[in-house]
Amino acid sequence: MRRAVGSAVSLRGLLEFSNICSCDCYYCGIRKSAPSLAPESRFTLTEDEILRAAGQCRDAGFGSMTLQSGERTDEHFIRFVEGVLRRIKRETRTSALPRGLGITLCIGEQSREVYRRLYEAGAHRYLLRVETTREELFRRLHPPTQRLEARIKALEAIKESGYQLGTGVMIGIPGQTTDDLAGDIEFFREIDADMIGMGPYLESCGLPDEELASRRIVPETDRGERLTLSLRMIAAVRIALEDVNIAATTALQAISPTGREAGLSYGANVLMPIVTPGQRRSGYQLYRGKPCLDEESEACSSCTPARAARIGRPVTVNGWGDAPHAGVRSVSA
Ligand code: 5AD
Image 1 (cartoon, protein in one colour):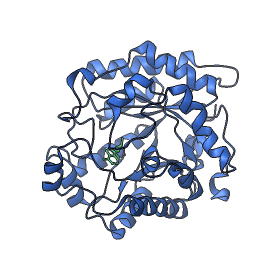
Image 2: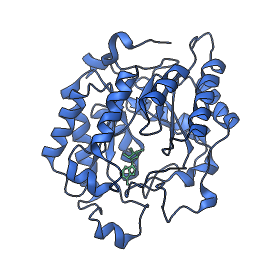
Image 3: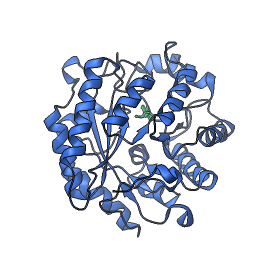
């Protein structure tokens, strides 16, 4: 791993800027019809709130940020995101970061034209998890309107629009086998992913318990087993794909307080400190037991890099942190 990506850990401030979602993925706590989310808990941060978070990432030396939200394809939303991207690129330039923050977008399946527009507006990496490449499992986790085939088409469109491409899966989905996970890694290679974000499948807060059970999407293995499997999957991806970025995700920390550190030790090289304002965090609970819900963004901004330091890993300051795999397309700040 040191040979492929070095020992440094790259940081991206993770801003969960809206929990409004038009999808209904059964495992997800912000799905359109999640009973756990009251209508008044649905939010979209204002442009100024987003810019404030971006300024915080710049000042903390993260070099990059990830903008994540529920999926919306309406023109009003896309235009809003475009405007925000342009402002972030313009307003986060410093002598240490002459091209402004590096931006990863994570706003779901969009049309080819929209991917193109958002790329033009300044995002240069895009994250869209495939969740699982086994058709039967994908169908069990999603309503019939959501198709694995469409997800894969979207991933291809992202790549063709010029972005560095990120994808990933959940690990320990009921019924998922190690063969399935091996197939997922093959898929990452075929789609030519530059970044991988994966984490354990966690108990959902998106459906009442009886319905989770009847849909056969309650985890079948204990949390410790899912953590071990997730760490092994990180190691396997590092060995198989070598020079990609791999995130040590928040979900690892939902199982163990030092889950993200373990992720780094098994081969991950990216950490994403959450910079979502404290009062909005309870509204962005994707699964049960999500950590850092009570924290303010300043706390995560200092705590998360300290996790790398504690296990002896240096952090990159003021760099975009593109994966070497992105090769000639990679432009550093
Ligand atoms: N368990 C684990 N990960 C989840 N996500 C959503 N719900 C869950 C869950 N119950 C992940 C999905 C999605 C990402 C934003 O959060 O993989 O792509």
